[in-house]
Length: 152
Image (cartoon, rainbow, N blue to C red; front, side, top):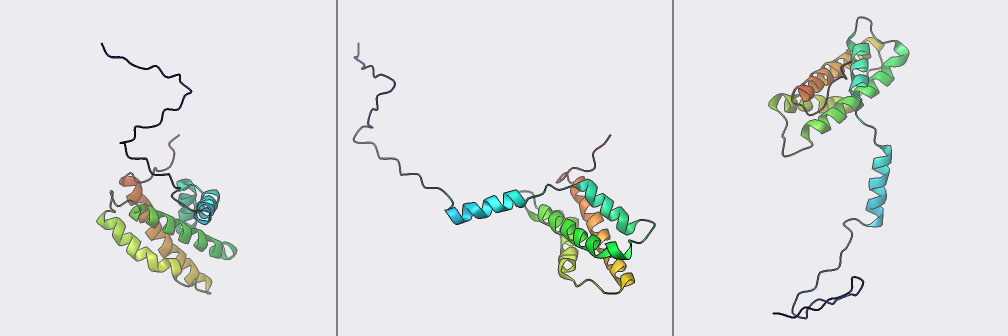
């Protein structure tokens, strides 16, 4: 029969002398990095696939976008394309398909391309952006990287 000592729950028992000590925990990020993470989280907007399809419809629909709305529409399409491109290449464990990679390569230069001053050329540019965005969003939905429109 061996003897065991009972220790009350709130007593601290030091580790045996021959066990190595546990290294002191240090946070993975410093204060500046944590502030940056907080800023990014608070500025983050969830991906709204319905808004993407609305902008695509406005761009590629039956009527060309109005002159006053074309600049803002191009800015939104660029934002959609950038976010979708980031989603396509974000996870190294799930690399993009060949078609996704091709669409990202086609779309990257369009993100920085200057918007034409002429309305007709701006509409043409918006439509090129919209076609690449449309194809990429379809590929991402098909590959289940994102969810499509909500079914009612």
